[in-house]
Length: 254
Image (cartoon, rainbow, N blue to C red; front, side, top):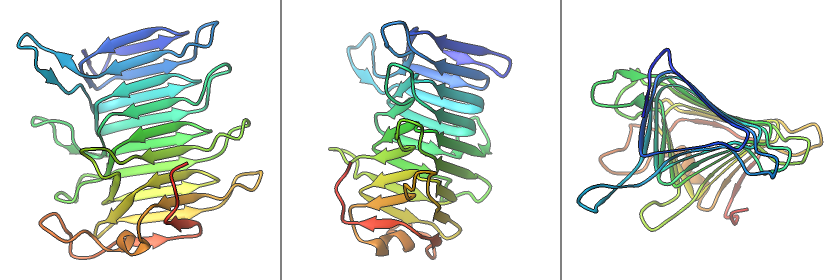
């Protein structure tokens, strides 16, 4: 599926669109539920080709905006936000939080494809929205012109915290690589097994919600790794800055 700069896809009221590999340069809205509480869904998962070999589904953004609202769900095996915005916000009246569920790597900012230039990508998770992945990459270590920005902010009226949870799996370590900017504020939270920062990165954890829920960056492993890049060929020259008011280390996933 390809949605160009002037194209629009709307999935609402419990509707469903299934795909394998989607290229987005226009506008997509996935919103709401049907009368029974079943969420609107857009999927980009595995594809069984003629040779009966499974290939990973992808959602590749080279512009435009993807909005997931009011309990809608977007599911993808891999998501590359090379240019544009993904906004995950709120919850459905009869369902859980709006959800972006990524089956492997979620990349914000960078290159969406071989033919695409490096671009700026933005992910916002607000008002109790939820994102899950097995690896997260904000910005790119090898190109300073690629900007990635993530904002996780707020708690909704039901008490659902805006959350990005990065889970470990057989093939992924549940790591968050931060080469640009991550803001967690007003009760939002990011949960990961471990995190690495690049030379020019910034992590800001600040504030609390109106009902006193503190913003949180929760890591399973030691905090030292947050301010130093991983050793090896992908390392940068030094760690970025971390402004912390609520960082927990050695906690279980919640």
